[in-house]
Image (tube, rainbow, N blue to C red; front, side):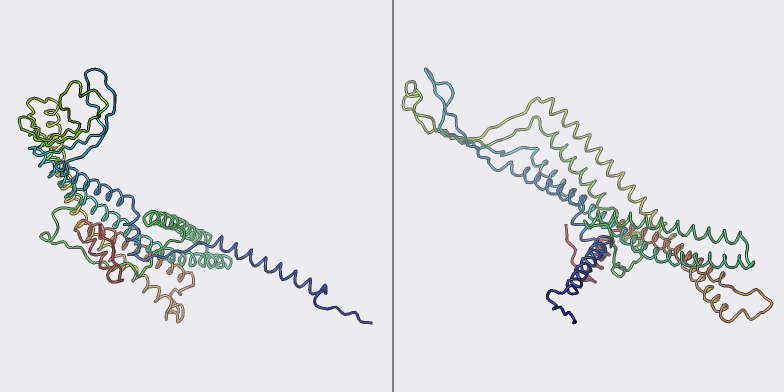
Length: 460
């Protein structure tokens, strides 16, 4: 007699259900593990990196706060002419002849009407605001320059990793080929050691390149405020480079940093001039006061027709005759103004010297990049010729024949020349970006890239 089971309570159904549940759990655990170990990849464009850096950089935010402070200082220097208003109360009890003026409430208002020095202080505050805005512009350019250099460094790192991977593959094949030739008696132990040394050197270069990539990723992450893991830049988003202007008549005579230094020196000279005009010059102030005196004090016992509401208005004139402390402060501010002027002159000289050096180094690096590029093209052409010879022979049976060993050596040499081209071009681009900032063309270069991608960068 055959025994049958229904699917609802059969052991077979229970076993299948348990296996499926275990399988699903295993798949879920594998998926979670893959997500945990798979690095997150974040690709951003060149202009997006610049935009995020300008918004998140502490250097820019500090400069913006300094500009806001200078704006408030300018408003404060002008607002001394607006009357202030202060309210208060002085409640109390008096016995006998009233001492003091106990009041229910009182209001006092005062302002500056005229001061020989205040106009100079307002002009100094305006010059300080100009200096803060110029410093903000310089900070934005510095952050944009740093971000641009980091972006092209990451782009170089990505290409270098690919080239080093190809070079490492050729080196591994070379070690295998030389080992086989040694086993066949066609090569020497020195040749095998040389091949292994080449592979080890390439592996070391790869590790150093990985360190450089991680460092560049971490630096860009700090600039843009994104996680460093897997951070990269879209290669096609980096704008085309153009040779910076070298026309001496078209180059700016200074930079925002130099202009900020001179604006600071001008502000300090105005403060010093205002401090020097303190003594023997009148100062005129406006003053007004209202008091509501109490009725429970004994004023009416000593004053006839005592008035509880009292008000007064008028002007106060002061003439500083002798103030040694202020005179010393005037000498101090004058010395500080002279020092700031010399600092601005020093910044200007360093700027001009640095720009001249950058112009010379850019031309030299451009020539080096051209030499490296031609050298790599020559190595590539030699590799192509070697591959043709490997397929068809040299045409001279008596001459030396090309071997797979020669092919891998040529591939390693060609990739090495390509790496030299990458480094030479990176150094040239780095010098060009530095020079563009010195010539005032960095902002227009970045904006041209943003306009080509339909992006509007924020203005300070």
